[in-house]
Image (tube, rainbow, N blue to C red; front, side, top):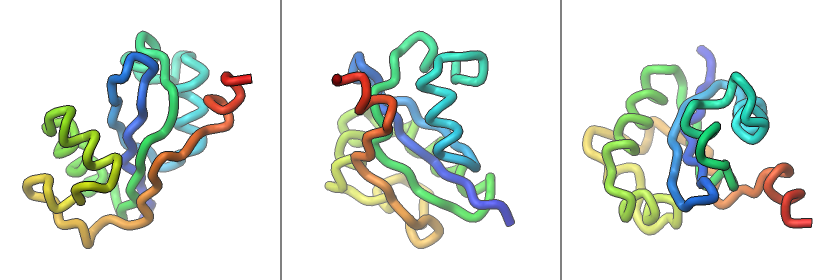
Length: 115
């Protein structure tokens, strides 16, 4: 079974985009390039950095987590990013089905913009 990632991407305006992918590096490059493969949202809201990502076994679980995160108010999304709450705080999500959380990852693209 193919592994999927559910991720949260911070934009320069402070907004948070949530999506899923099978290749996190490729997807981040697409968002930061703002080309045709980038999400419509990140083409109009400049991406800043990958805040968090979780790995799951299959598209169904990744999509379920994505939908749950998108339903959260921004204040809870911020707490999830900081690790102040876990995935179990999202209704209908069993955190044992997700692994490999990545937090506060700065992509090469966002790091290079600071120079």
